[in-house]
Image (cartoon, rainbow, N blue to C red; front, side):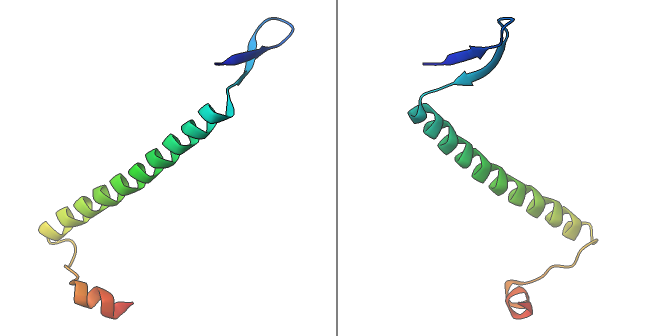
Amino acid sequence: MLQFLTNNKGEKVAVQIPIAEWDALNQKLKHFEQFEQLKEGFESAFREWEQIKQGKKEIVTLKDFLNAQ
């Protein structure tokens, strides 16, 4: 159930929703943000792989990566 708040001209200026709906929307937003982070990570990895294939970037092995930390 949505409730709209209006100003004295009758224009909608805000909306109220039940807290359960708000919590559900926040949970969906959290999952969406996590998905976007994962997607960005994959896109970055594919861009890096293209650079490696083109000889613009050197391959770093897992062993070398872990030893550098």
